[in-house]
Each structure stands twice: as structure tokens, then as C-alpha cells.
Length: 293
Ligand code: AMP
Image (cartoon, rainbow, N blue to C red):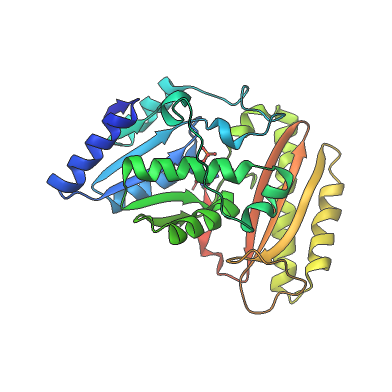
């Protein structure tokens, strides 16, 4: 496994792999502080591609001025050891100046979709995400890039960017990996104390209850959302940012869920920690993965 810090080196390695060795490249973009959720993406990349590149970069442009950029957990030594265990070929871990050279002035924005849900709560967030992913796709030139359904809106926006700007990579989206309590794995879970961690299980609990109600025939979005709000309201440590039901591919807001799969998504503060989660209504449940399975 080679750890690469420079764009130029990463580009020349990728060029050789593609042109001379004809190998398929899989890219897994991450911000590090790796957990089983990330590892599930790497596992799939390993199965599908000849060469696996994992990027580890805490991207400053996707954090708002009052967000946790400085506090975000960073441990490249631990991450690299894990990645070596997972037979990753290259770790691309650039410094911020390497990704955004002095004077960089170009951003990529997917209009419309980037202002909904997470974008409404975190202005500018998706502009940062699409810009950094565009740079990564250009530097690594992967055949496949792997993303988690945990960030469902991000995956939809990246697919749109890839279509619109004719990137070659195929985007693969994989299911959410959860703790036994149902809490979706996230690098931000490290901010939670044990009591908060226990309380955070209410998030997935509420989503699952709504999904059960949906399966029992409740297709009215307002009533499903109220059900989620009510259950989360019973947990004193939790404060809802938003709960929403949207078309799972277009993110159009839905009042009533007909035949199309719908994304029930939520952002909740547990103390100062902001957590997101989602379930898809109207799709088979086989897409459920447990970290302890
Ligand atoms: P991050 O390091 O949080 O930017 O995440 C990097 C990638 O891992 C993104 O595509 C996430 O959607 C994905 N990811 C994060 N948490 C999970 C999870 N619990 N299950 C599956 N994928 C995840």
C-alpha cells in the first residue's frame, strides 16, 4: 500500500494503471476516522475493481463557519493501518493546499438539489462536496466510485454531477451500516458520551416505526412525519433539525407516497452533535446491513 500526498503523483499512478496496465480503478472518498460503514464500501470496491484507492481528506469547503471542521476526528496512522489490513492499494491523503492550490477559484454546484434538506440546513455544504468529488474524480480517474446511502442526498447529487459533467466513473451506492442499537455508524458518533449514544438510538427507532406504519398502509407523508417527530420528542436529549419525505430519486417533496420509493430522512441534534439518518419507504428490506452481522 502506498500513501500518496500529491495530486501529481496520484495522477501519474492512475494514468499508468489505466493506460498501461488496463486495470479497473475503484475510488472510495472518505474524510477518515474510518469505521465499518467506510469499510463496507472498501470491501465492495475490492470485490469489483483491480485497484482500490481510498482518499482521506477532511474537506474544508464543505464545512460551514460554525461547524466542526477543526474538531473533526483525524487519525491517519490508525486509518492507514486499517486500510492496509483491507488490502487497499493506494491511500490518497492530500493537504488542503494540495487539493486547493493557492488562487483556486473554481467550484462545482449542482443547482436545485443542493438547496434541499441538508443543503437548507448547511448552506454551501454540497458546493464543497461536489467540488472536492470533481477534483478527486479528475485526479484518480476511477472506473467506479463508492458512496454510502447514509448520505442519501449526497449520493443523488453526485450522480447528477457525473451525468451533467460527463465524468466517466460509475457511481455505486451501498446500504447504511448500523450499530446493534440501530444507530447509523458515523465518524461524528465519537462526539457522543455513553448516555447520548444510547439516546441516539431513538433516531433509527423512529424511522423504523414510520416504515412499519408505511408497510401497514399509512402513505400520508404528514402523518408519517408526525409519527417520527412524536417519537423523537420523547427523548429529552434529542432535538430535531428536520424530518422530510421526498422522492428517493428526484428529492421532490411528497405529500402522499404512491408507488415510487420515498426517502424518509432526518437530521437530529443529540447535544451539540448533529446526526443524519434515513430509510427508504417502498423498497425491499434486504438492503439492511449490521456492523455486528
Ligand atoms: P465520510 O467519511 O463521513 O465523508 O463518509 C465517506 C463515505 O462513507 C460516504 O460515501 C458516506 O456516505 C459513507 N458512509 C458513512 N457512514 C456510513 C455508514 N454508516 N454506512 C455506509 N456508508 C457510510
